[in-house]
Length: 279
Image (cartoon, rainbow, N blue to C red; front, side, top):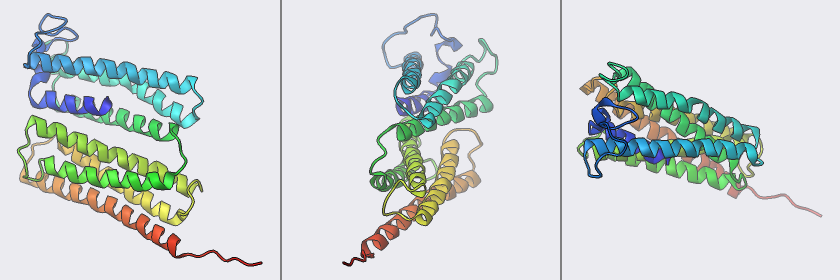
């Protein structure tokens, strides 16, 4: 739901629908429910409804983490997601009330804050999913997570404004964030699984290799976040910024691929080792 909400928010902003509904919130053009046709009012209204349902689900997940038998990390992640949720709602309301409740609300600073807070919530939910789920077989999870990260970075490159494969249309922008955030989630899972390996929770993976994988994944995540920020109109997108975008995109892929190579080498070393037995 949160991943889809991210894509919907990007599509809404890219089509200019965020400034629809006559800059009203929570009403839309003096209506509770606008006309059910594809128009800017409906796009903005649908985005708000999806956000509301997702918000209630995030609160429900936090409550579930406290009621159920989950560890402290999981509870902390879900609670933090709920704690910053009002900030996201407030910034979202401000960005669509230009000339309304808050004049000049749709600015670069509020737009950036809306994106960054949403990314924080998405990351916290990803961590809660990893920490609160079944942790057995994390070596397999590590390989899967890196595969998702690499595939996500490559897919995001196809839709990215840095690579002139496709027109950076509203639909392409939504697809770019779906792919990029999927890669981000894969890197979050990689960090969690690598940390488990360092703590001795994963057999067959040396702590030294796990540390290298974790460092490479953290670097890839940082580069990927830069590409996600450059995907919005937070800067005047000149040729220089396009080159920066290309470099960070390539860096994210190289670091994620490097982590997969280290993991592959560790697997190969484990297969070559033989047990010493005797009577």
